[in-house]
Image (cartoon, rainbow, N blue to C red; front, side, top):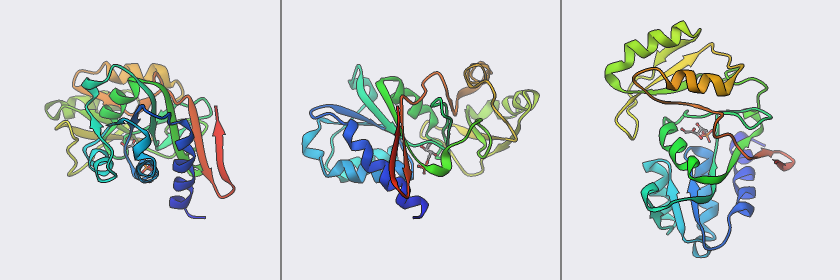
Length: 219
Ligand code: 5RP
């Protein structure tokens, strides 16, 4: 089974967490694209969705799902999103698709974060396979990069990418994150950082792993 098939397995299994007549928080990325397609099949059973990217917003509308802004809801029952890496504790690196800030905002509104991944995303330590994305106000790019070097990382400017919020991304390579909660706060405290892709404060409550043998659910 290829990676896309495993993503589809996880995405379909996430439907069991969607309650009728609710507004669903929806992240972004290729796994979420599979989830949006599956959600389209039960579009008449939900009130709508809040999306974490303009791209997901457009896909939800294509499926006939009403899209609400984050300002229109006070809380969400569930937020469903993918990840670039996830640990057994539910700590994640996200932002491969540059949507990390909106993902953090929408997931913060939710009672439960359901993370849908294929089995290759599972790691013991964050930073093992994936660079850490950091969204930065453009004028602070060099300053923030120097601070990230002093924290032990190797930041690289993601060329030709502007986020939905008009900012740039630095990807931090060779950066093993042994204390995710602490590092998330430390990086967020650097002036000019909008947010970073460590999701530790808002970790996943449920991980659904797509495998060739079906969906494995870790609660
Ligand atoms: C986007 C994200 C995605 O959830 C993450 O990159 C995983 O993407 P994919 O499902 O395509 O593997 O954080 O900012």
